[in-house]
Image 1: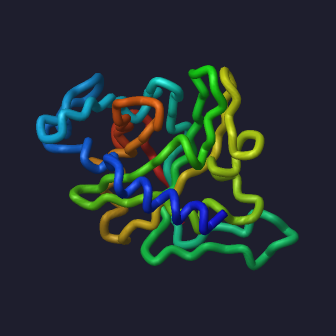
Image 2 (image 1 turned 135 degrees about the horizontal axis):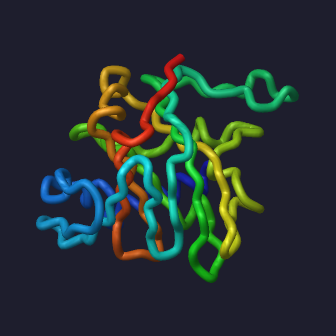
Length: 198
């Protein structure tokens, strides 16, 4: 699984990254759709309290984000299965609904990034792949969400400690639905955007 994820990361790096979509031309637009003047990429934007609807999926942040140094253990049988952040883990609980007619693979078909200021963070597979973790990549049946169904789980990012406060003021959760030509953005501020810190 880990080697497979590494191969996917190399392939994704060669394709258009969600980072390219969050350009200055779309940074001030609150919601709706805009076109990145630099790349011509269509960008769908939702605010913190709303659901982002892309072609195959709808994504919603369903709980206040958390900022922690460690995650786990999630199984009493594996008490040492813990991930420790280099900075701090910024964790979002999300619900993903499959709007299409084919199963959605939570590893292959979806990509999440977090933009804080000029810094872009990809999600931490190490922290999401813990045994028993209620993460999005472990959600659904065999990491898939069937058509018309939803799955909930967390996604997490290893963020430099000094940048974690930006989640509440100017952060953007970037969602790349592989079947959609648009990139999705959920603002991480505004609405019910309280957080917990430990």
